[in-house]
Length: 207
Image 1 (cartoon, rainbow, N blue to C red):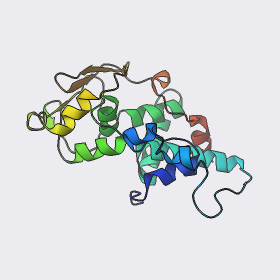
Image 2: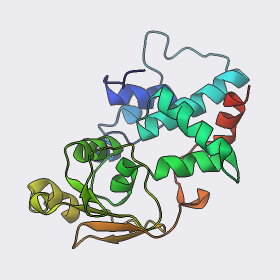
Image 3: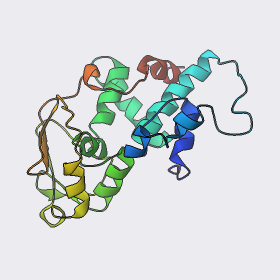
């Protein structure tokens, strides 16, 4: 399935909550949820009966949209999670958190996951000293992600550092002065702040 290229705000409205897909705009009055908190389309404001399958599907779509992944990627990650020890739903979220583009976003070196994916694709980052331009690459404990030297002085990264939210990510050691982050542990469910009921996704794929 091709990547969605339409208006990001429609995705938030479809899920009925902020997915924070547009960075700083999501925190202002311009946010679509603040203006029109109902599903897009001519029937968006009509009441619809939600089935069990519908609830499960919405949770899956919500996760896909949070992380900006395709249906085939979602299926691949679920199969990986299902083969791992532990709780499948939590394993799935852990895998998604360890994607390179998400790690860059968690480091505060991008205002959204979409922007992080673009910056990685454009070759601004090194993984363990090697230029990497694959946003979906899965990182692991001990990996070091940093902005390459030629990109360090760009206005984009200067602005991101100046406006850094200061959030602490327990599984990351972030050095803003060096524009570098080290993965010091695997993320736990408590570290993942996205509002999703992952057990519904497991139920959907287990049918």
